[in-house]
Image (cartoon, rainbow, N blue to C red; front, side, top):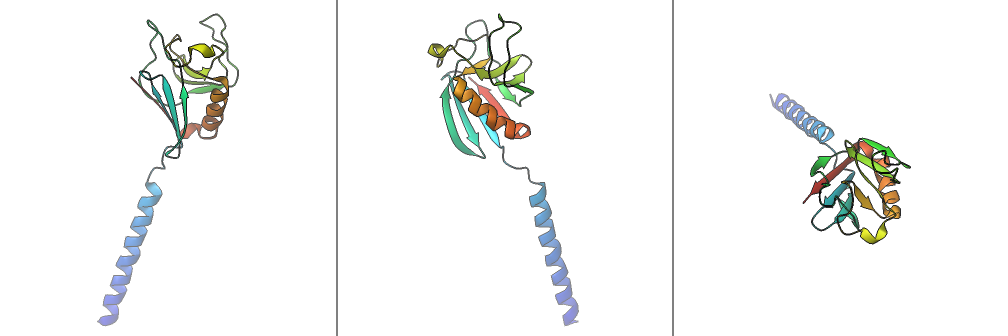
Length: 148
């Protein structure tokens, strides 16, 4: 009788450990890259694996050209892109996230930190290149959060 109980206990422990390991395997990984854009402060904060890495000034949509708020994922990426809608304007390191809206570099550096775009999120070209490289490595694991 004593051997039977210890075998049962061993079997229960093995099942408990297996259940815990299975639960860990099904737990979603933390977001690889999280891009937070605050339209009221005109700032972008970039976290990688939960650790804050960058904080940059941006320009979002000026009056009459709002930048959408919400939670998005990249839908398309292009190192070199030119706006078909706005005078063939250059959009280096474009990360599209909602219809024609994108995060991209700008050469209008004097306007960074204030609303200036037709709805896209503009940032310094070197910062756009850094962000583009991060997102390219973890595209399926990137979250873009835009708030007021």
